[in-house]
Length: 399
Image 1: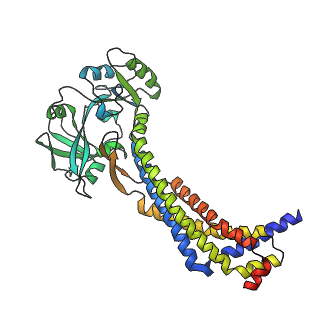
Image 2 (image 1 turned 120 degrees about the vertical axis):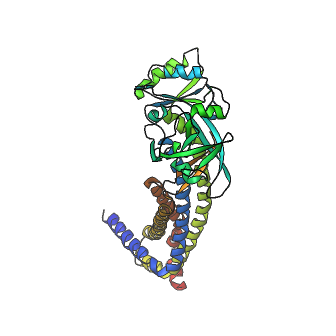
């Protein structure tokens, strides 16, 4: 027991001295720390893109809302429903009723081209035709400027994300749809959801402009509660009059975000691994230099009876704290630079742009710092082993 206690005392004493001596090698230490900070900043920054996009999709869904598509469609762009189909959906058991009837909105989804404000390049912007129940189905939607469009007129309202990202969507201006000008009469928010990337108008007017007859692509419904979904789905999928897929909105939007989130995450991991390899070599060089500079000290400690274990841990401790400092710096830099940064990207499921904000969460920052700590431990391992194996006599003569 006494021997074990003495060993821990040696570890504490040597590790403390090693960490406190970092300022004596400020140049090389700072270089390693900044290299690791860069790795963490890139990792957290890239993953915050996926996190922000996923949060936008998740905040679009309500726990008691469902979407109905044609069987096998997978997305609104591939779907198609007749007026008869949409009426059957609206009359199905489980759909909530409001003062004006069932909370069921048959909707049309088309794409218009508008230039991005940042680059001037054309991008696909979703134009959605809705029915009156749409504003009750999506209870998070709120007009923040102007008013809602009037039914039966060539008027639109735009989400704040679309208005911010795309030129030509300023309040009071007009966009060309179907060869005719459509006036922008309002701007709306939707609690950061995907609707903020869209332009909304009357479905009947949009059908006429695009010669779609009386067809739609999806039906958005509000259910009595989340537990009503099973009965609602069973009623529709077993009804021989329709051939549809029925999904909860959160399930649908999770599927919409899956591909892009996986792509961004995979890219972030690849970039981080490549940069981490460089950071590890930087840590190796720094710690080899530290060991070389402390050859006499390490040999003296060994001659006084200090075991090789405390020597190894002292070198690892120095490398760990350097990496921890760099990781913290990188996490803070990523938060200040990226959190809340707004951009737009292509949703591969709908082939349209989605405006979103980067989301640097505490979990991402912690992940970055953990990665930094691992880089520090790996980078300090071989110099630590070299220090422990250094022959005492040779080390004293060399110094």
